[in-house]
Amino acid sequence: MGQEYDGAHMSVQTPKAVLSPDAIVGEALAMVRTSGLGALSMRTLGARMGVTAPAFYAYFRSRDELLRACAQVGYDELTARFAAVPAGRTIEMLRQSSLAYVQMSIDEPQLFELMFLYSPDSLGVGSGIEHSGATAVFDAMVDQLSRAIAEGDLALGEPLDYAMALWAAVHGVATVANMTPGLDAKGLVERVFDGLISGWSPRPDRSEL
Image (cartoon, rainbow, N blue to C red; front, side, top):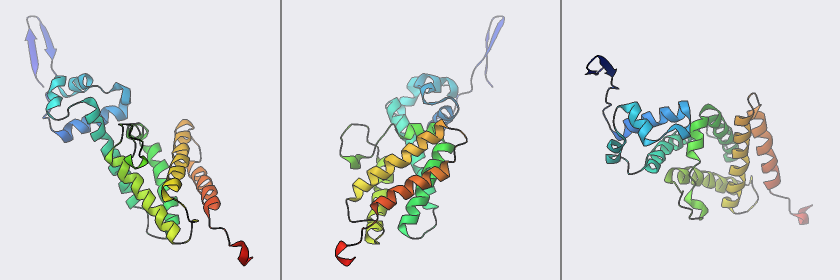
């Protein structure tokens, strides 16, 4: 640890970190996880890493660019959780992915909040807060819903519409779960999922009744 002497006074300096994009993102995520998104600024991060805020601009042009890199870590983790879902019929994989989504929100509430500062560009809103990581996660869900339609487990419809409704419902469960410690989040996800899928199931042709 470096020491700086000033006459009779001695101050202890924070050792300077070796800067790299990964090191900066890792330290920023540590701050977000422990103190929340509002605690993260270039100045506070610099104090934590023993550098001045301008040092970060060689790696990230703005706080938003840094936050986007941090959010990508979250999207990668969510994608890994989805990839760990056992292979099976698509509708069951969607159920398990919905459970994984809510569980990640419980395990990583601060990171989850950061991730959803951004939106998928698949929505076509053009709000300026789109993120490629969010797009990849959302588009994977649209693809799964397309397969579920092809497999006959969902009525013919627009996969994007199904995806929007499923995301809204499951994200709502995630929000409630984080507001309500002790909630049976798994049971709530399954009831919500089953309710949606029941409403979206193919109806028999009345001519065949």
